[in-house]
Length: 209
Image (tube, rainbow, N blue to C red):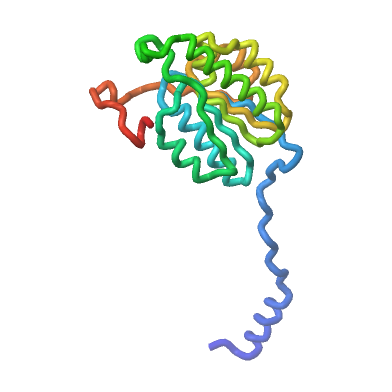
């Protein structure tokens, strides 16, 4: 049984002990922000998925996000429907007439229409990037647009050089050229090891679109 002297000693020790200090937050750079160029490329699935995840993370940090999708056209997709609920922190728009790869292209849509849509989208992209109104801009499938010859690599590299220094710019699509890899701050390559299409499983809503 504790004596009165022991209890008094414990009380004195408690009184003398320093008050607990608040735990410091991690040493995260606050300002000025250094805008990054982030590239998600490769033949594997997940490039747009990664960029959308990045956009959601940025919105959760109260950053202003603009997503512009090239090539994919106006069809309904799960990500577009979900992101509409995050407005105005995330704005998303489409510019394109669908796939440009010959085996996937809708033959009813002439290549001239694809080219016109891509040029319109590119003009939008330039205005969005240079506006200074956003913290993160995602140009989804811009690399496919470059590969199809609808936007030139020189145009894309010029936009990167001239973007606001605090703007994060994310680019997706297959076949990132060496010149882009050289100037990017982050490059992630998606490599397909296994895909349900190899088992004859067709694209499924909620997974592929």
